[in-house]
Length: 195
Image (cartoon, rainbow, N blue to C red; front, side, top):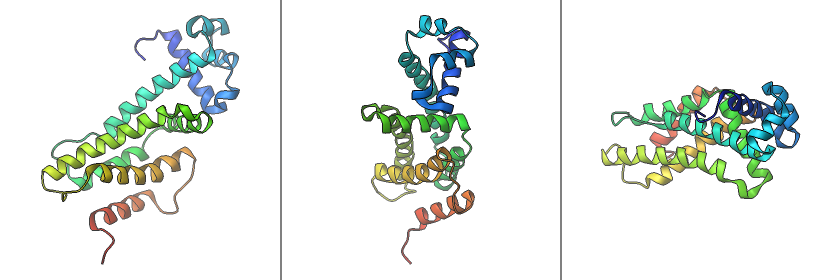
């Protein structure tokens, strides 16, 4: 967002707030202008129309979110598997409401406009790629048996996405404490299901 001046940033931030509260259909340039403290004409002069403004806003927030995902799923060569996965789970749990709103907007966008699946795909791809990279390094070190790292990444992503992100996006609370859930998931992952 560094390429935008302060007025642009105010408008983009106001757009995100209005989209969070009201969704795309009810978000008007008039409401956005009032939230940003600017004249509606300023929005049209800088962004041409509502669709351009919304696209720019989503891209700005998506870039921030992807950077956060990179940070959460980044690893050091010395990281132990248990610590890494626990850290991922906790990192997702500690995302801000704004960060979860980005996912919610992306999911609503997919539902409303099928050809716009790119936003959610980029988020998914970022997380799975980082997990796969970590698991490949653990396989090379001999800490994980020879398995398909992409499948394992997809499995871990599915659990964390369903368990954490969807709970937060839809304001659902799990039936168990999240720490206990994370520990149970990790126990099953490490020890399998066979007796």
